Length: 244
Image 1 (spheres, rainbow, N blue to C red):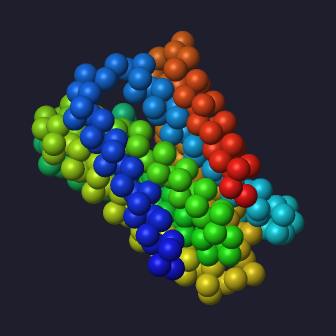
Image 2 (cartoon, rainbow, N blue to C red):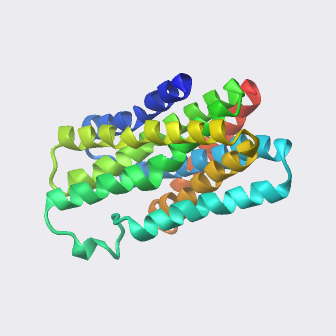
């Protein structure tokens, strides 16, 4: 539990690095922003499909893995359905920077950091330290563009660069909590480790496909998101091969 919490805290600091990028480069081009979002999506897809699903399939049959994938996707879907968050169709109802700030922060914590923290906790609790390290590193890498994605709208809404970076850092608070839940679940239901790994994978894959990739494709003809996605996918695949 202690190792998983420490790893999740360190990974969560990546959101703060994303906020710092906004401070250092306040006028980042849309192409670079899209590339970083694509990078984030690639990390989540690779971590879910290679790092988490691989061990899950080795430990159990396709039935348990399929059920876990669907439950992970359903978890995020329900959170999106019942937790207010910043999307184009919801934006007209937002009034004032403080309300916008609260909605954005709540969205970041509940819709993104829960599956990421859960993945770190489950990976460490599965009894394979190398698996936990890979997932934690992948989440840390993914958190950098995610922190940027949080800070940029806040800056556009009128927040100072320092304030936007601070909120980006604080948005990672949910990850250690979710990591503790993941460790606790595996401790109580040890035989369900493959199912738990699949739940984390399903949640990460759903977030990438439903939230991050569409946001990165605001310009349909842009190639930067795809290049960023492929670069991060290859990076996570290489890390998995080297460390496992």
